Length: 245
Length: 245
Image: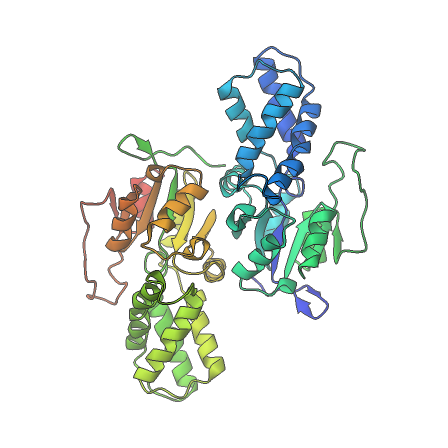
C-alpha cells in the first residue's frame, strides 16, 4: 500500500518521480569496462577498458543528436550503441571481436549494475510516490537491466514511447500526461544538470543526485550541489529522507 | 535475480507474459458494485449495485469500438468510463450524483481489487518471466490499481501507448516489439477468448485463465477450459505451476 505524497515544491505536492537511468541509477562506466576487460582477455588482446567505456559513452549524445535533428530516422539505443561500437573498434583498430562478440557487448548495456544505494532508496521512495524511469534507453534494455538489478519501478517510461530523445520536451511532458498529472506534480531525478534544466523548462520539479564517480574518481565535470534545483541529494537514500520517506 | 524461461510452445521458449487486466487480474464487478453501493447509501438512494456495474461494463466494448472505427478520436478509458457512466445514470434515471460524485465513481476503476491468487501468482511468474500488463486501461489507471493492490509488474503496456484498443493487432505486436521479442516468445494471458484469439492471430502464445465469478456466480457465458489455447489455468498460481515456476 502506498502512502500519501509528503513533499511539495511551492504549493504543488509531488506525486511521481521520474528517474534518469544511465549514470543516475546505474554505474555504466565500471559495468561496461568490466565486460570489455573480460572479452578482451578471452580474445587475448590488450584494451584500456575504462577508455573504451568512455569512448563508447562519448558517442551517445552525438548519435541521439542525429535522431533529434532528423538526420537519422527513429533508431533505438540498442541500435545506436551498436553503431557507436563499430566507430570505437575502428578508432582503436580492434579487429579481434567477431559479430557474436559485438552483439554480446552491445547487450552489456542491458546488464549495467546499480549504484549500491539504489534498491533500498527506490523501495523507500516507492512507498510514498510513483517511481518511473524516464530514460533514453529502450524498453527492453530498461526491463532487462531492472530485472537483473531488482529495481522495483512502478512504470517504465522510455524515449522510445515518445519517439523523441531527452532533452526534447515531448519526453518530460509525455511522462506527465501518461501519469495523468500536471508537470509540477512530477519531479525529474537525475545526476545531469542538462536533463534537469530541460525538465524544469517543461514545468517539472527537479532533484539533482550527486554521482561523483560516474566518470571515474576525480573526473566529474560539474561536481557539487546546485541551488538552482529544488532538491540536491547525495544518493537515493538521502533523497528518500529529503522527501519524507 | 530472474531465472531462465522454462516453458516452451512448440520450439519457441516463452520469455514474457502479457496480462489482460479487467476480469483476468482484478474483479471489476464486485469492486465497482461495492463503491456504487457505498455512494448510493451516502446519497440515500436505492440502486441495484450489481446491475449498475454490469451496465457500466456493458458499455465498454461498444465505446472502444467507436474509437476503433474512428467514429471517435483517441479517447482513453477514464474518459470512456465517464461517458458511459452518464448513459447508465440517464438510463436508470439517477440524478442524485453530482459532478464530484461522478468523478469519484469514475476513479473507482483505479481502485479495483485483485483476485485472491494474483499477488502470489505474479510473484512466482516474475521469477522466471517478464510480466507485463497489456490492457485497454490507461497507464495512470494501471499504475494506481497496481500500487493499491501491490501488483509487481515489470512493465505496464496499455492500448494508450499504441493508440489502438485490443483486439487491434497493433497492441499485441507493439508489446512484443517493445520487449525486443518475436511474437511467439510472448504469451497473452486472459480470461477472455476473443482477446486470446486475436493474440494468437498475431503469433503470440495463449493461456486462458478461468474466472468463473467474473460476471457473478453462475453467469459466465463461456465456462470451462478450451483446448484451442496453449495453456488453460484455474488461476495465476495454477499458471505458475503449469509454466514450471
